[in-house]
Image 1 (tube, rainbow, N blue to C red):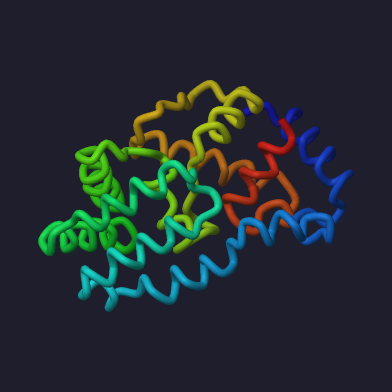
Image 2: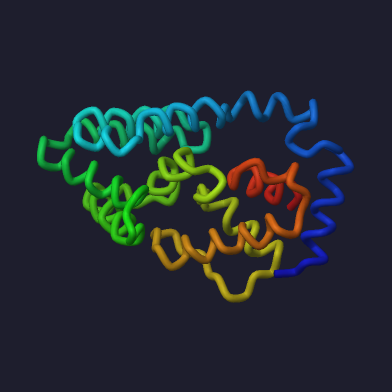
Length: 205
């Protein structure tokens, strides 16, 4: 990672918004993305007990994806159709996979199971597989938006991480680790969550 470029990006951003994401000038963007409300919704509806009701869990997942400003409007209707097409056993499998992804000792297993379900319906998209975990734990989980991820890797001259359009746990972990390293280097006002941190970097490109 090119630290000099990161420092320059931080300086440029703070020159425009001295208080980072707490700056009044960021109010419109914060309102547009409405991360806080979706985080509250996700955390209120994705408790361990909720996974005992697979049909309700499927609806919760659909609501999170549908309400996210970061998921493409072209992907939302296809994801809605996917959720609505699931039978009882498939909704149970979806709930089980998401529970593993959010709570399991092997989050990778949950990731792979979700990816398998999405791939079967030709919906193996980064935004769809990373949205729910991000809103559930926005300070730990990364939201992977392809154009943003590729732009950040290129701008920071990251050599040991290569983006691929097909989601993989290996890339996700590497990207998550990169954002954690960036977070350590910049002002706390630039990282209220990982999507905001990515947004700061993307706006600086």
